[in-house]
Image (cartoon, rainbow, N blue to C red; front, top):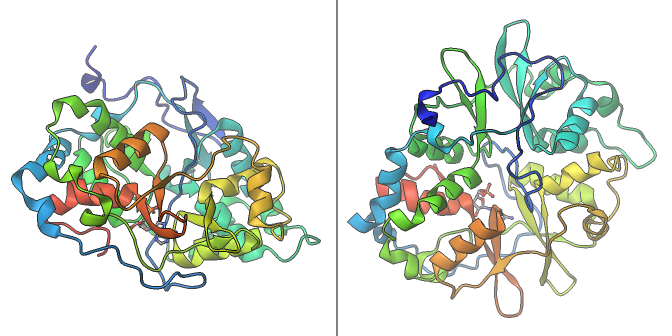
Length: 376
Ligand code: AMP
C-alpha cells in the first residue's frame, strides 16, 4: 500500500498517559552513535574560546547556481510524511509525570525526546529532551553530597512552570503534508533538533523529525539526484561550518563545566581537548543522558575524561575531518556514521572548526533559496 494514503499509521496512538510507550515497532536506530538535543536562541559566548581562526571566505554564490538548487527542489517536492518510517517507537509523557521517571523512561526506551501531553487541555504542549535534563542539573546541582531534590520530587509541569516562568512558548511542530524544505527551515530557524510531525485532524504525533532523518532521506535518493558541482570543493573553500569561537572543554574539567557551556553557548557538542589543546574526544548533549542511565547525576564533579570513560554504550572515538577534504566526502562520512557533526582538525589535531548537519542543510537546502535561517 502506498504509505502516503495512510495518514494515521498504525504506530500512532492518540492519547498517552504518564510515561507510556505508545508503540514498539522496530526501533530503527536504537543506539545511534551519538545524538544531540534541542536548543533555543543563541546567547553570549563564554569560556574556552579558541580565538578567531577563519578558514577562508564563504563564497555564497557557490550555492546559488542552478545546479546547487537540486536539494532545495527535491525537499520542496517531498512532504514530511514521505520521510516518516513505516514503524517506529514513540514515547509520550503526561506533564504530571515525575521528572526522574521521565528521564529513566527515555533511557529505558532508547529514545532521545518525548512530546508532552497536557490532559487538562487535551493537547501536546511541548517536548522533553536531554536539554531539559541538562538545564535541571545545571540549575539545581550543589555538590556530590547533596541530593538533587528537584530531580527526585518535581513533576514535569512543575519544572516547566519554574523554568519557563509564564513565558510558555508554543510547541514547534509540522504537519505531515508540509514539505521537507519547511521542516529543514523550522529545525534550523528555531534551533531545535526534534520536530514533531502532528497530523492536524486527529492531533496525533506521527513521528519526530531530525536533521539526521532528513539527511538519510536525501541519501536514499542520492543516485537519482544530480550532485551539485560545488560538493567537489573542500570544506575550506566552501566554509560550511563554524570556524571561530569554538566551544571546547578540557578533559580535566568537571562535567558541571561542560553543562555550563551547553547552557551558556547552546551548542550541541563540545570537542574535548588535552593539556596541549589537541582534540581527544567529543562530549555531546546526548552523553549527559548516561548520567541518568547510570544514576550518577548526583556527582557532576567528576572530570569529562572520567565521564567519557564511564560511558557504557555506544563507545566511540571523536570523528574528525580536515580542511582539505571535499565536502561530498564529509557528508558521506556524517551519513555513514550517523552522527550530527564532525570536528574539523588540523594535522596536529588542534580543533579548527565544527561541521554540523545544521551547517550542511543550511548550505545545501536553504542558502540556494536565499534564506539564512542559521544566523538570523
Ligand atoms: P548544531 O546545533 O550542532 O546543529 O549546530 C548549530 C550551529 O552551532 C552550527 O553552525 C555549528 O557549526 C555550531 N556549533 C556546533 N557546535 C559548536 C561548538 N562546540 N562551538 C561553536 N559552534 C558550534
